[in-house]
Image (cartoon, rainbow, N blue to C red):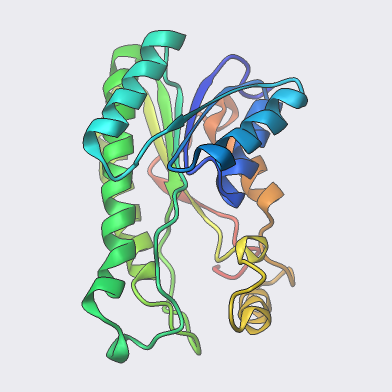
Length: 250
């Protein structure tokens, strides 16, 4: 198993992406700690993992709240002996479909504030324990991409690029402690778009049409790549984005 015995924290673990990553981590032997705001969705994922023979815990944590994040990370490390993997996959609260010229400041700022703040808080909390251990992996979504044409994406891509910059800075400071920082760049995961989103079919088509493989990354793809990135098989990889865009970005 790639992650046998590792203690893995996933913020946003009750969501579609976070849940898929959590199941993949557990399948590879990690003890999974799910964090998020909604107990019911976290427990649903945790129960899936337990029923498949894995080990999972859940906790209500607000990833935007400094005290909540610090207490959670401290409790994982204290109760389980280490904190080996930290993955921030919370919702960015982005507003899409509205042109920037018509968007409110609040809607524009929401994903930037959310992704950068949660990335900083969760990474900092994990890093404090990983420095003591002399090892660890911090994961998040990010990556630099071209502006999206023919679709209004609001502040989302800007937020991803800001998060990518933060991750590289973290990698440069934490590398000497044996800590790796990696982002996953997906180009959009069609499966994660709710069925009731207006214009969903057109959005999925716009994501798919730009790929070389004729498809988007799946939730399973994300889980598999996250497992690899967090494992010792990728121990030479840090300060970069793993491109799993199916060729949308070359």
